Amino acid sequence: MLGRQEIAGYGATGVTAAATLNADLTEEDLAVAVARAVSLLKTLWRNVMTAECTNMGGTANLFTLTEKSGIGAVTGVVDGAAYGEPTSEPEDIGDGSFTFAMFHHFLDKDGSRLHTHDRVTVRVDPKTEVSAMEVEYTVVDGTGRFVGYGGTFRSRGWTKPADDGDGAHTVGVVRFEGQICRK
Image (cartoon, rainbow, N blue to C red; front, top):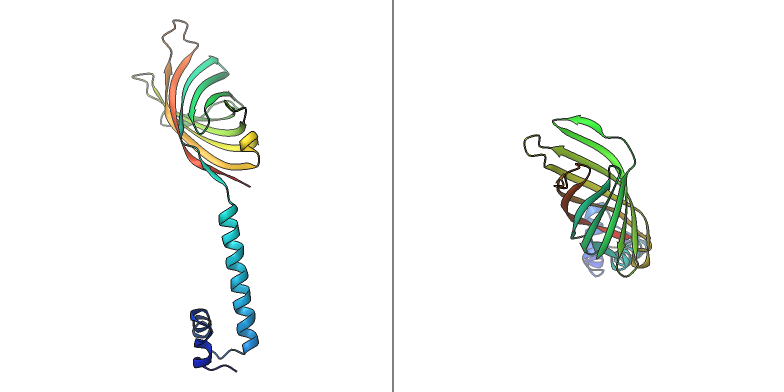
């Protein structure tokens, strides 16, 4: 058995282990514990150093093409365009708000692409016809520099009917935030 003085020779890890256990440790027990701790730290460090994450900051200027589709000019991490369509009917959640599902394809000028499945929440202001919009995008596929990425990022912004006379189009702007990481 090792006494307190001998454990101190193993450094703070040994002292902490002995104090935590409040018992004497054999050299073999201590060596196993230290080896496991070192292995765990190496694994954690390797995971931190190889986790490749991208902050999804940027903006998009939106324009609906039809009642069921829209495009956006995107700047930021994705520098190109986005196309989206709803995949469910709007569901009234009260307080002038509704929610629905969508998908998006984000296409960067370098040819890289992100495909997302989304949850949209919209709150319409009946006085101004301006809608506050929040979207949560979950990455389901990526190509080019987005291969292997996953995670969820968000946007917030507004939309309003376009002044084009037919009332069929909407314009708006959103700001992206959050990050996605290589799996």
